[in-house]
Amino acid sequence: MSHAAEFDEYGHKDHGHVIVSVFTLRFILIALLFCTLLTSGSAWAETAIAATFHVEIPQWINAFVALSIAVVKTALVVGFFMQLKYDNPMNTIIFVFTLLTVASFLGFTSLDLGNRDTIDRFKNVYAYPGGNGLDGGGTGIVFQSQINGVGKPAPHGEVEEKKVDESQDITHMGYLPEEPELGSSRNRSRPVMGITISTLPGYRSPAAADEGHAPAENLAPSKDHRPEPARPSDDHKPGAAETKGEPKH
Amino acid sequence: MSSSHAHSAHPPSAVEDLSKPLHERYHAASHFKDREHEFDSVKMGVWLFLATEILLFSGMFCAYFIFRLMHPEAFIGGGHHLEVKWGLINTIVLLMSSYWVAAAVRHAQTGNQKWLQINIILTFFAGAAFLFIKFFFEYWHKIQVGLLPGKFYHYTGHADPYEPMWWGVYWGATGIHASHVIVGMGLFAWLYFRSRKGHFGPGHYNAVEGVGLYWHIVDIVWIFLFPLLYLIH
Image 1 (cartoon, rainbow over the protein chains, first blue to last red):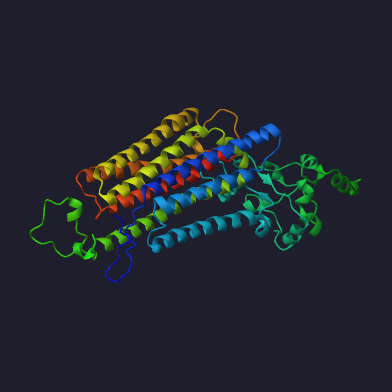
Image 2 (tube, rainbow over the protein chains, first blue to last red):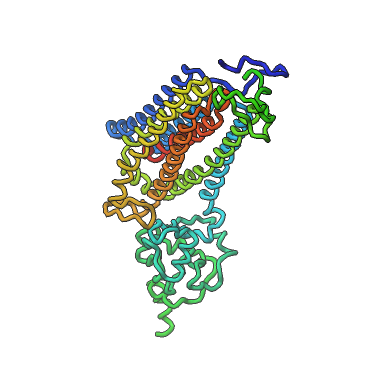
């Protein structure tokens, strides 16, 4: 019944219609079901082992095992059920090319995700985590900062802080604006002490900052590099208030 | 079948042997050289369509990837609302249906009309079972307690503030997958009525092959969705 043994008028084997044997199909089905139980079983076993022996299994192991089994299952389905193993190689090329496209898609996304801080640090002293979709949906990273700029708090008023290392101070030197302008998202990228910044979400008072990550010291490179004239509400810093007050007495 | 030129696209002779089944009397469309040419072209066309399907779902996988990296706690918390049991049963249902489709193609190739129809029906009902489990045991409960995407989210229990993101990914990915299952069921109903008329046989089964390939891709998407949504925690 199979056409694989037949030769066409040019003496080539007819590779068009291969009839996969019943045995192969059933074997593949059993292998797929086995892999399914394996992947569920390994997820269950990881939880059980972690609970029994009080160890913490890193999440990447869990993800790696589950996705590896999924890749094996996909290879079985594509190769035998979809008959790519026996098929015109052009179809395999289309499939592999699609996978490469997906890989570059995910790859460039992760490059962007992993490097925003290093490329655009000046704007990412505060990194906006984006909306959570509750606020009418679709408040993305950029749009979120615009909303904050006109004084409307973020859905949960949360702004994540990122630590700034020494090298960032150098990055800042050429970029910091001379005059901070309120109402622009640009000002959200660094704390501007002493101006009515406390109305903006994400502001932490110096008192709170002393206990926490101390953004006041870390995030204000302008203090070190460019001494600025006394600012209106510097008086909440004990030292600043005293020095300002002395000449008047 | 031994010589493909017997089925060339030249106009059929006026006297056609009507006692032959439809699939043997089938002539390739006039822009194809013969049935083989048509079969290869149709199959490649289906593969190109499947490439776009893979890219469609890769967008969802990319969203999962980004939001999982940004809000891992929300994804772990959201994943605990899903029952592995139903995901596992649905995976087995889809794998069985994939086998039935592959068997249907085999029966079309060998001309076994009875089992061709039985396999098509089995696949149709496997799709129905998948959707029943999905809607009745999973979606329904989540709709009732408010575990919905984006602004529709109104769950009152304890949850990470970014959990609506997880539900957006969950509903987006499984919803688009389920809509593919519905389309697939429609295609299998169409195949069933055509197979009852004897449209498919060893010489002509393009539609069975094409719909089968589509169904396998739907299965493969679920093969990835199952561990990503239900198992990784």
